[in-house]
Length: 621
Image: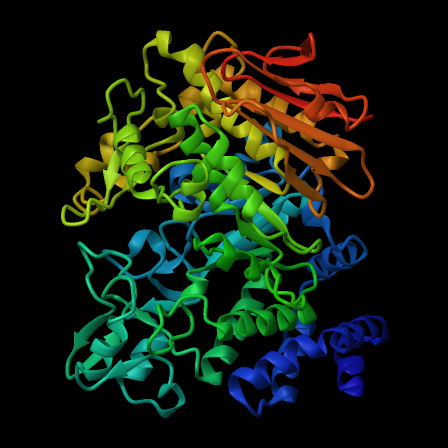
């Protein structure tokens, strides 16, 4: 291997490759031996060496920079932006022409929603991939994607792309080869000749889309194929090492096109075990650990992000938090924070937010959260019975209240969302709607003062809780629900498209006018970003802790990085002014206001005063 690496990479690059191999060998060999037994280690390392030899020089230079600064993704200046390529600008080339807009906002991390070539027709919003090595032709080409990645790198931005691990479209070449009986693909998918095993599995599996796609198996010919999500998405058989090898080659190939961050879609579903929910099985973590190590062997500047919308105790292991640290993903979505922010806004009560975050396990220093207010998906109310009971609530009744409130069915609600996947038998549902509409913003200017404060308050917590904050496209302009999706028969049955609008560039043109709604929100988010990048305490890898205060309307939290002073944030979820005992934050030392909704924090007679829907960031200089 030393001779081969030296010949193919040159002496200097070979030394680095072999050093990475030596330091990551445990993360490659041990998990693969546990999952697959005997492994062809030389074959896998050779695959990584091939990718390293093919890696373009600009990406090698970026790797070198990130090896020197291995936690580049934790820097406080990191701010993400999430959008659909076509809905933001129309094409990949057009996205590249609009990077000045993202630069102005302060974005350093661009996540383009699924853009790899999907099947034609219904495709689960692009998550039914028919070809991992091609871009959706409506958006451009793989060369366009590489060109965009290069232009992002020139601006100090990184590119995040979705990679669906659990399944492919049934039209994918792997699936067609499997159907045709090609022995090289004989173990790529999961199927059964009759209903005996599917019925056994389904006794413990919770369906993802119970109303429109009940069950986890679909009959094709004389076989029952495992289809966790939709009938046209066939689950890969990760028990086969051939699937592991094929996916490794896929990731490395895409990394060499300039992708910096892989969002591992549906990763909790990879491993199937009878008698379980087939979620978060131990083998999933071993597989991700080995993939991570092999990818970084060839492309050390590349990182993983887990799309794992699961219970908090099941989430932190994807960041490597096991009984012994095992590196998996550097990033994961903080779904719990997002859900609890909306819950606090509806109830004007931050106690459940504080309770649920306090109970979460800490994450390793090498990892960091991705925090966000809104995403492309519906909002599911991940509220545990234990947390609800701790604040005197019933978890089921609270979920029902949140659905009623944010769908506008609760008397006095300002929200304009809609129920998604409502189950009339169980009463369960989730919520669709844009962040601005859920905050009560409308075209009526009378809704703006309070609605803007709600929207900014949510972002003020997400931006300062620790990690990489994400802005979902349009939220920086307070874009409201878009009901034009109802005019498209392919989209009309899925109301999540109400919060997936096309970018309103006319609205964006008003972003510099503070008298407009767009100007109000864009200006405030830019303030958050500008203040954040200078606060070392908000860098990832530090400690976040909930601070106990004597007012349930107020959420207080503390951040501290080993190289910073203390940061304390306060957020008032009530429309009415509130106070907290200043002693709760006073013992952290002399704290100055770094940013707030209403000027420096006022402390009178031992109480810190917060205006309605106000926030403050305090920092120990």
